[in-house]
Amino acid sequence: MIGGPGVGKGTQCANLVRDFGFVHLSAGDLLRAEQERPGSQYGDLIRSYIKEGKIVPMEVTIALLENAMLASGQTRFLIDGFPRKMDQALKFEESVVPSKFTLYFECPEEVMLQRLIKRGETSGRDDDNIESIKKRFKTFTETSYPVVEYYSKKGKVHTVSCVEAPDVVYGKVKVIFDKLFSENN
Image (tube, rainbow, N blue to C red; front, side):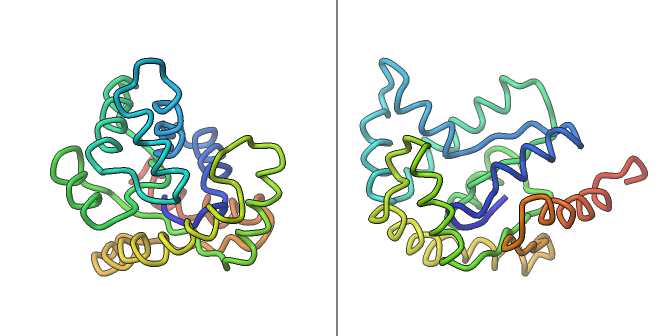
């Protein structure tokens, strides 16, 4: 699941978990939890990267994702917010598992900005402030969008516009998942 910050990946993943039984792993949530875990060797490093809107080193993120996947005991995962760079995509597929498909949530920056500012009023997240948000947009455009292009060339990308209300967006997402994961497939 790839899309800019505030595009609604978490909201859509929650619906997919409910309707299709996937395990939802948010790279960002795993990183935020790790930075708060007492005794974490990566806590300060993660905190500084997140505050600067930078991408945490892939070894840390991949290890957290792989551990969460193994701990779940399941085989179907929605990984949101990852991979965010080409090297992450290649390393994850080489060392953990190949991606079956990529769902790309497309949304104009102005819409994402409004959503993130609103979320920041109650989220308590260090990166839901205007300075971090702008850095996150730049990072997404420069480093994450090439991942979408890479998977698109492999025929693995399904694009959904996220401008409309979450339930309308989910209607579009559900059609894709019904085709990909119906009991006949």
